[in-house]
Length: 108
Image 1 (cartoon, rainbow, N blue to C red):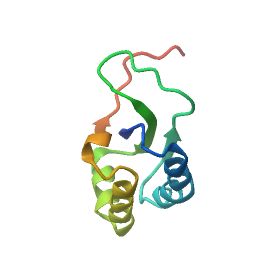
Image 2 (cartoon, rainbow, N blue to C red; image 1 turned 45 degrees about the vertical axis):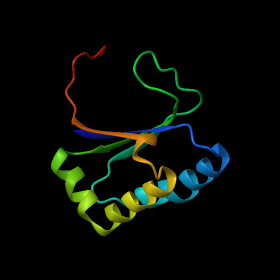
Image 3 (spheres, rainbow, N blue to C red; image 1 turned 90 degrees about the horizontal axis):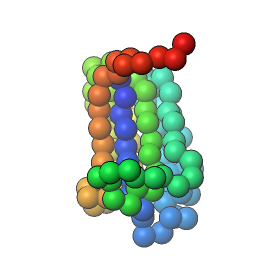
Image 4 (cartoon, one colour; image 1 turned 45 degrees about the horizontal axis):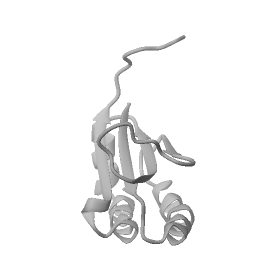
């Protein structure tokens, strides 16, 4: 599995951000080819180190890094990328990380 983690800083207008994110961005992203699941943080985010002013974290799960690349090369992926610029027009207001998963520990 592979993930895309998107961390948004606190926007100037949180209510407008939330409305757009939950009513437009998420429904659009749900159509990404190969998307397995999409998680969104809820409530305050506690930054233990490094991060400044995190507001919302979205985590998208795909089968592989290749699947992420294919998804964002698609028409829907391009629309999601353009829509992200509405949510965070300044690249300093968002961080994005792509990575493959590996299990380091499992309690089961």
